[in-house]
Length: 246
Image (cartoon, rainbow, N blue to C red; front, side, top):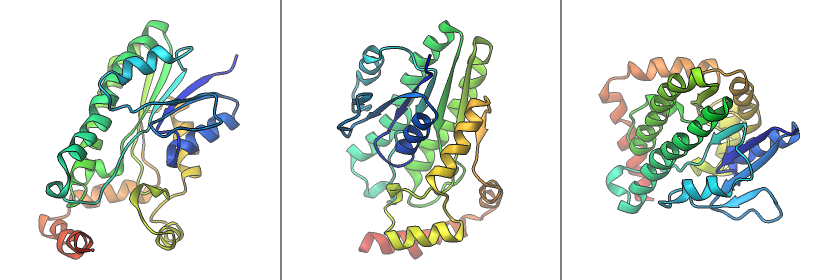
């Protein structure tokens, strides 16, 4: 019998690569996204920030997946005060409220069955309180801490929880033009979605607790923690303020 996976945010970017690689490996994959995915019989169109989205999603499933990947997310490089109240709510609803309710329901169902894996997508920025990504990094930090604790709560009930904290991945999420994306990939500042997803899946299926892609990213976490506020602040006048004026 085929193993089944579910991927939120599966219509594009890293989510689409999770869907592609899992299907290539013989899994049945349910792709969930607010963007319709025509021609995919295993696609579900759903806005996960709607109040009853978790219940509607789980009720619509033909069976409980063996692997559940919470990948849906948003990103802005903007000061908090420049974001609309609706955008602020979207960060908290998608990265925290929705993910938490999904993990509560799915974790309980997997524990009742006695097996299952959950992969939650955080970010390396969860260690980086920088101007311009305050909401992104803060909500991703919640995902990491929540996932590490949830893993301990479920480990004796047959359920493994992994959290991935990637550095820059070469997708459209960050809004870079194509030439800068190619340059960042060539310099090693970003990693291809194919490589990241392959490694993240391998570690998840081995029941690892956390995955950070690349030794440079792991080292940068330590270095960023040592940065004085004066250097962190330079991101604002040198980059954030300039982009705001464009």
